[in-house]
Image 1 (tube, helix red, strand yellow):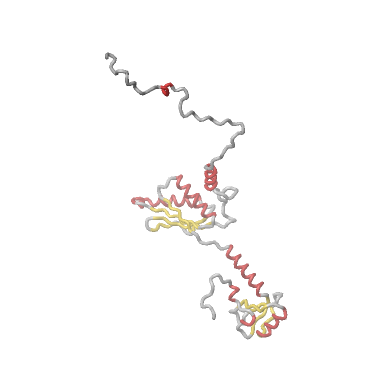
Image 2 (tube, one colour):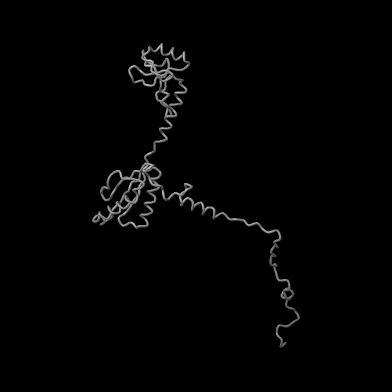
Amino acid sequence: MSRPFSPRNSSPASFVRVNGKIRAREVRVIGVDGNQLGVIPLTDAINLARQHGVDLVEIAATAVPPVCRLVDFGKYRYEMAKKEKESKKHQHASIVKEVQLSPRIDPHDLGIKLTHAIDFLCEDMKVKIALKFRGREMAHTDVGFAVINKFLADIAPYGHPDFPPKLIGRGINVMISPLPRNKRGKNPNQKENGQSPAVEKNDQEDSATVPIKKPKPENAIAAKKPPAAFGNNAFTKLDLNVRQDSSPNPQD
C-alpha cells in the first residue's frame, strides 16, 4: 500500500526512478565516464548497466526522451545529499530586527541603538528602522528625517537601505540589508576572541561573586572564647536572705 503523503525529511534522491521503475520505452543514456551513449531502448540500457555493475538512474524525467545515467545509486544519493547540504549552508534565514527611534532621541541613546543595529547586520540580519512622531512632533518631520539620515550615514559601512526613508502615517520607516561579508566592515563591538564586551563583563561579574577560601596557616593560634561569666565576681558570695532576728527599724 502506497503512502498518500511524502515524508517530511525526504531527499530529492528518494523520488528518482531506478532501473525497472523507469517509465519510458527509450532513454538517453550517459555512460559511466560521463560520455553520452545516445538514445537506447530501456531494456538495452538496463542490460548495459548490469554489465558495468551499476544502476540505471533517471536524472531528467521531464526531458523527451528521459535522460538516464549509469551510476551506482548509493553513490548518486550521497552526491545529491551533499549538494543539498552545501546549498543550505549558504542560505540565511530572513530574520528582521526592529530598532525604534524618536525625533528627540538623546545622542547617547542613538549610539546604543546604532551599536545594536551593527551587531544585527554583522549577524546577517535585516534591520528595520522605525521613527515615530508623537503629538505635535508631526509638524517637524524634517527633524525626524535628519535623525534617520544620520543613522544611515553611520551604518553605511555595514548595510545599505533597500529604499529611501518613507513617511508612513505618523512614522518614518526604512529597511536596511547587510552588505556582503567581503565588503562589510568589521564589527567594532566584537573582540578578537569573538566575544562581545557585554558577555565578557557578565563573565567577570559571575567570577567575582564566587567566594575565595584562603587556606589557614599551620602555626595559627585558635582564638579563645570569652568566659561565660566573670571569674572574680564579688556579688556571687553576697547573701540576699534577710535575717529574721534583725529588726528592720534601728530605733527598736
